[in-house]
Amino acid sequence: MVEKVFILTEKIEFVPDKDLERALNFNLRASGYVFNKTLEYSMYRENLVKEFNIGNQYKVDRNYTQKIVKTLRKQKPFLKKADSTCIQASTDRLIKAYNGYNDGRTGFPKFKSLKKNPVQSITLRNNEYHTKEGVKGTIRWQGNRLRLNKLGFIEVKHKRNITGKIKETTILKENGSWFVCIVYEMEKIQPKDEFSEHGLYVGIDVGLTDFLTFSNGKTIQKPDLKKINGRIQHYQQKLSRQKEGGSNWKKTRQKLRKWINKKNNVVNDYYHKISYNIVKHCKFIAMETLNIREMIKSNLSRSIHEIGWGKLIDMIKYKAEWYGREFIQINQWFPSSKKCNVCGEINHGLGREEREWECPHCPTVHKRDVNAAKNILDEGLRVAGSTMLCLVDFIPIGQGKFTYKYEWKCFDKTICMT
Ligand SMILES: [Zn+2]
Image (cartoon, rainbow, N blue to C red):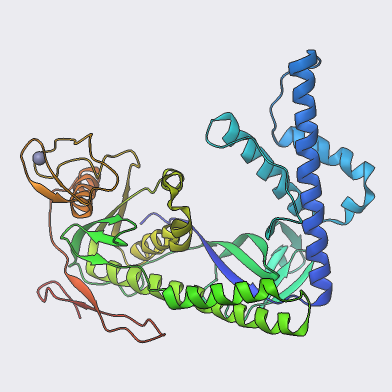
């Protein structure tokens, strides 16, 4: 079996001690400063070329930003104290922004306002170095503590299953709370206790109306976060009215943290269960490659961020690998929604909001998502070079009030192992 590498992300809240908080704030300011200065220089140079015909057209790349950073370090000695991987990550972000602009995907890079923007972030990269005891990473675990380069340590209560090699961490400051996003590699994925040879063949369509739609018409809804979101909103509003740093403000912040944590846990738990059950019951899983950017353009960005499909798809992907199931992601340009699954005709006039449509050619009446899921399955099978077809049938049973513990039951006894 070919060993595959999966990159996963875990977001965890933490409370830094005074020294670490100072160091993080310093690096936030420093990387923001370098980002803005590099952008300023780049714009200045561009102007010289455009308006005065001085110099050459250039590309904002690593070479270029490194030169600027070097000059800035000479001018502003305080930058020498900043973490170098964090500075580089911030100029890399600018390079990315420029690339997006040059490709016509995004607007021109914007200056960072550290005061107005409530979310601030820095990225620290893991560099390996050799010691007497072997190779060590600059970001590494020491028990339940995560070492962040030279900045300090953070205590992580739930280390969970972060066992792979850490690639980088992004530290986020959101409304006075600190989060760490740990990007890590899952190594050496080998089938655990393998499920039997049996299993179903499914195509899965993701959507906002129905969270997941299976090729046999079953749907799974997204976790019900209404109550939790209500509490979060309540405490966010309360927090904004209170005096920053005061004792009431601190109490409210504590409560807000509790609910944000709860939300993350609920979503994580739900995704783990869904992905586990899909992989358990299905031996062949086809999904689309999501074009998040296109979806965000469609004005639904808030709910898309909240749902975090990418995370769920990652989980299905690595679990499928883990348990020896086949997972196929089909091309993002495949017209899964517009193609009639019965006759193959493509309905170009299909609007975004049409939940049901009649094929102008054959004429079958389709449920939009089910038709799409069927097409995804067919396309997945075509890509995999298989022609088998099978149906899946499972539903969630029971849901606690706040625990959101779903149980799953497969109804096809001939295939189901439970
Ligand atoms: Zn048709």
